[in-house]
Length: 331
Image 1 (cartoon, rainbow, N blue to C red):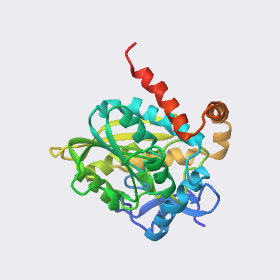
Image 2: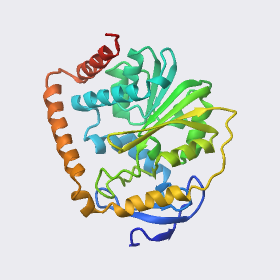
Image 3: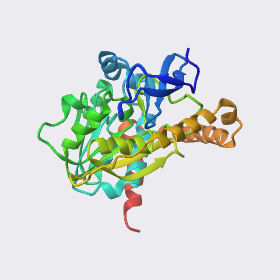
Image 4: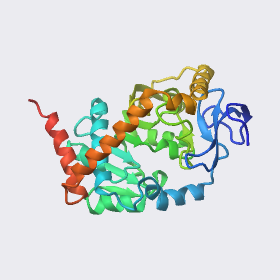
């Protein structure tokens, strides 16, 4: 086993800058299983090295992903209610990029909660979801235009959108540069690609807890902007949620944009120092760690009490969204 935070010549070159010069930042996944994760010394992209094969990844997302994360083939009431709350938070954060009557595509749409909210707010939204159980629920229970499948299979051939959203999807994709380039072709000029991923720099979770078989890549705000630039898109917005657990960027399609070459090794060194200094001891001794844990437990208890009042998932979702829509009306 390679010692953590030591230099390493990666088997797989960095997907963004093609360098093989890395540091090892993880040797195990969150479940204690072997998984080497490295950090590019030249730009700061984190990634699994070596990468799993395409067939294994596709089978995992079609059958096992939602069951492993949620423990169910189809969302429970608490999942739908929670996802509805998250959809509201995302709309509040991004509403300047989500005007009424725009056409929106949500990739990795899960149970369809974000699509449901967008359509209720006058946005022509549709989704694509690879997991058959969640896609079927969104289509049959919520009546939403959700396609079951993968991005490359289900993108409408001649369709262009005002907005494409990917919430916690990019980190799972093989060849994200090519995938983002494909999505750029399906955006109207001036359109926006909205991406939210786990933030590689966060210190709110236990060290190494973000490393997972399903997470092929690990980004921060600068590597997300770099990814956009590689596809001719300008980063026009950056924000964080849940403390700094997640990072969101908005990339704009702009044919006049000419990216400037820059040295990103400073970004890599910044991430390296943050991760190296984030030890188990420093984590457990920090008050924020325990405040977060208590807050999460209290929130889950409130959630259980609330969802017990609803007869099914759709009623739980509608209740969450009704309260949000009410807050949008002028007082």
